[in-house]
Length: 119
Image 1 (cartoon, one colour):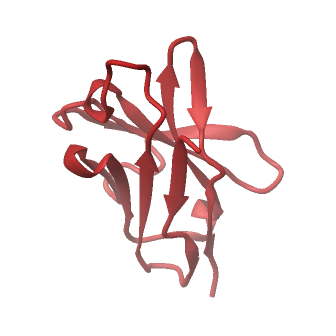
Image 2 (tube, one colour; image 1 turned 60 degrees about the horizontal axis):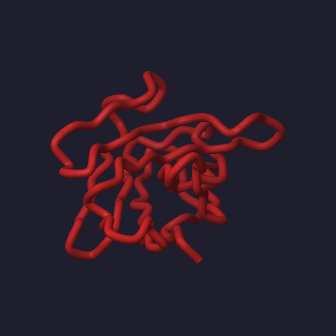
């Protein structure tokens, strides 16, 4: 399994969660650090959408406007792990969150981790 996400759960509005993603299955000769990584999410009844990305070195990040200022993406290349720190959560953040990278011509997704924001 090339991607395993964890850290989801149920939290009240205004709360925080930290998601983790451990990746493997890279193209031979490449390592985790060679891949930009992203988080996507899919809310009930909606399409999967991009949330945030981080470059291989961890020096550049980008966020969807809906999460900018509340979510922080980071990575630990020594552990082949990416994180998504989510603060000030809102009910509209409820979704399955997916970790992803592009291997060759294929975008690889994990199974996702469920986040529910509800009072």
